[in-house]
Image 1 (cartoon, rainbow, N blue to C red):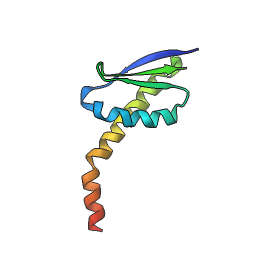
Image 2: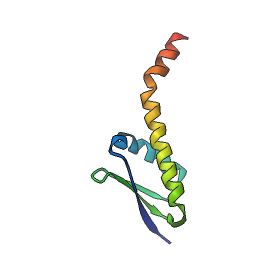
Image 3: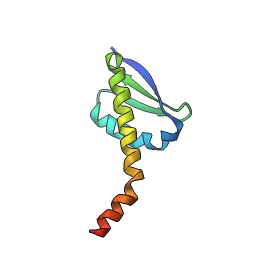
Length: 83
């Protein structure tokens, strides 16, 4: 059974969504992920009926993972240079 769900994204996190979706496409190859920049929301299509909570959790995790990675890049670079 094919369905779709919409997952709302906070506007402050929009810049991290595309990279997060790249990871999610790998983790969930049976689901089609589309980002609507205007809403902003992610639409997941496929067998999503029983997995909405898990998909929302994984989407949030991947977005925050990317946010932290980018925000700490300068700190990590300085640490590596100090070695």
